[in-house]
Length: 301
Image 1 (tube, one colour):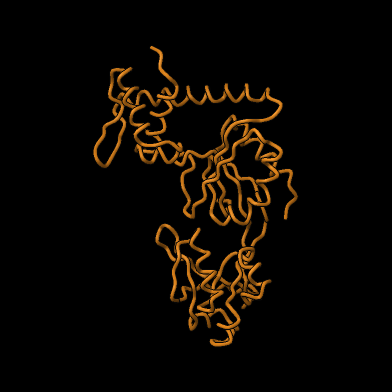
Image 2 (tube, helix red, strand yellow):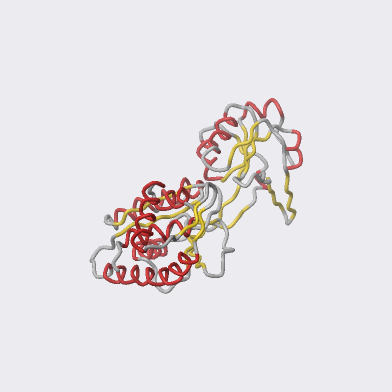
């Protein structure tokens, strides 16, 4: 029996993602196309591969048996294609990275243009979001995180600045009205513009000086989701409506322009820079290998 590899890939994508919509997002496809591919695969096999309800999509026993044998085989197919790809003078293919919004804004602009200039036949796709996801379910080759605590089957490679820190600032007009705090606990009497993770957890404001660490949950008039909405908090601070804490790189242009004034600088807390992480497997896809080698060439900052 012969079957189009595209149909088998659709079955794998739906099984990994646990649904057609989730698989469509991970593969940059659409649910109806994947549903049709799975239906055709089932017709050719003469077996139902998934139990479908309005809420869930689960593998049948036949589907589980197929996936158990299919996944290692498809890995070998990818390895064979990648081995052939190595004979090209220029690496080619697609590289999908799942990254925090902060990395997309503060880290990758110094890397991506030069990488694409060196490898014009590689297509780089960046998926930026604030919550940590399973890179496999997201259909990505690698991801970026801001700490090195990764699963045992992951490899971490430093990328971007090795030390970063959080800055805190407010508009001069706000500080003229409300006063300039000299200790982090004084922020409890200020209007603080805060961020919330996708999980619903409010981000703590952390400070450190001479070995003393202080963590606060200040109050304020605005809460934004950590990610793209952070710019709204910055603009609100510039408008003189509160205090904002964010990556120093993010706030630095506004500080240098005089729109924001830094406060509590001796208390600004350092943290380790981000890491590129990817599965510890025998063969790394050629586009990802090119990217890893490229960032390892860059000087540490």
